[in-house]
Image (cartoon, rainbow, N blue to C red; front, side, top):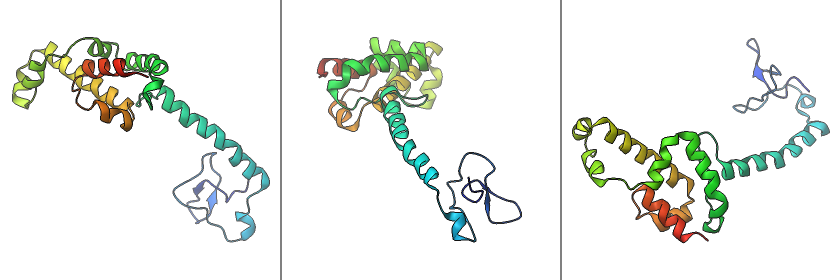
Length: 170
């Protein structure tokens, strides 16, 4: 591979040197000759062969999620296949989170936690319940496409939203 094609700038000059296999996307390569910027057929083949792989990775992340992104439910008829992936994702985040999907949230805790002063006075178990509820609700709403979520925006607790999704699937 041509040393000026990608890499990091050499400390004493403006040209790029291939110091690693990862390209520098912040700036375009600098070269003094047009031959140095010529892209070989092999390089184009490498880039074009990567496109389907990149697309499949992006689709896979949408379906299965990633460490900080839950799997996305794009359409309600996808619910039967999505629900197991989502359940696995939630359990991977925190096994106690799933309780919020099956247990009603006490609205008195929501009211008590509405200000910093009253939140500080809550017992530890209620603080934990409140935190789990907020995290579970955020994960669930993040996993819904905007086309689905707008239909369920009136459901303000994790369990109510979850139950509404189950009844409206497909």
